[in-house]
Image (tube, rainbow, N blue to C red; front, side, top):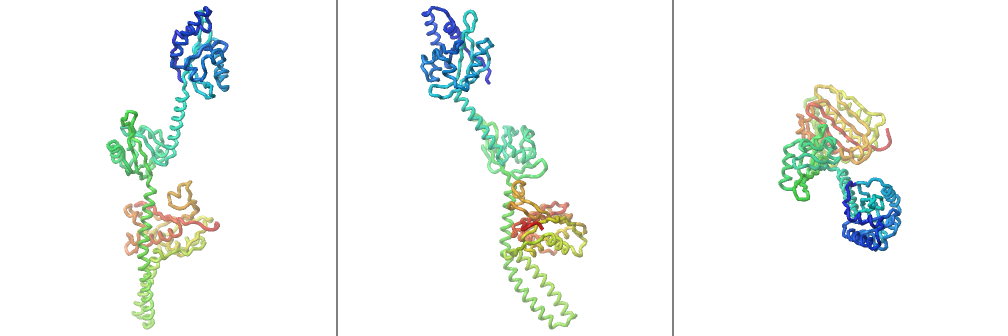
Length: 520
């Protein structure tokens, strides 16, 4: 409520005093009436005089125009019955009664609706003044009013627009930030607090560059906004309070005041971490598929050659005496050829021709048997953590055994001095609500998660992007098909495989397989 005194012309009040309570001769009274009316009519506001009995004794041209009545239709009529809507009468009568009883004139404006001749409701802001006769007795009221209907509607629309805009800002998944001309944060949305891990109240007033891995690069982008008016897809990395990094693309532009002066910058940051992961995943798949086509052709041809070689070795062994040097050499050649045949089998599995032949399988025993086989004769032990209610999966058991075997062999080779590796399996729901769909790039549903953890030297960061590449290996004498083959197998099963590792802190490989059937 605005508290402001309404200026009133003393001449009007004095004239109204004569009109409502004077006892002058009729002719003198009419002169005073005419003079008062002239004052009232030139006023830019609505002016209304009421007698103690609530009847209208005077109303100016502005008031008549607003209400849609001629002056003669209003004079002498009860203001409350004639002009006020029913829902406003009780409230306004109470104000009038208090004035007539001598209550001090209020400083604030009073707002209420009036009803026009056409039935329209108009909101008026009133300031009320008591009218007194020369002896000081209250003889009525003089009210000045301003039609604020349109202004009020504009304010409400503006307020609604502001609330709507705020709701859009808060609903945005992008980080939205308003910065002043010095680079201090003046406003942020909820997404900004989430991506930085810093409460909104702590962000306000701080320097925006404090939250990036490269503050100088952030400030350089801010400078470019002022020079060019905007920047598009400016790459930066935000460091969360817990230390993890989010890759973002910033789009920013200056904002100006009414005079056109630049007041600051409005910036929007989009998290592209997952998009880049997906792009890398797609590039990895495309690379594997292209190599797979080549590998399939090589493997088929090589397999045919090996079949001929093995057949000839068997024929040659028939002519060699058992125990002879020739027989021993042929035995070694056959073993080498069989190892080469195993390699072609891996190539075929890795290539497109290795489509899985699935059936519902219990994973618990498969995992234990395969891991124990891979560790047989080594100085590495396996600690299993597999629940009794581990779900079944619809898999190609031969291929999944190969995956487990490869992962356990890698873990064993990462701990040459011996020790323990951990093999864990658990039921895991993947959904949009817990964020795992986005994190794992899997369809929503129930999965079995299998993890193999070693405590070796870990994988250097420079090699992390290559570990699923065919023929990439850092081990002497290795082929480099283990993880590439595992990736292809798991992908064809509708699952996902990923590796977490830090140099000097060991590695964990996670495999996700969609479940099938009932709980085993």
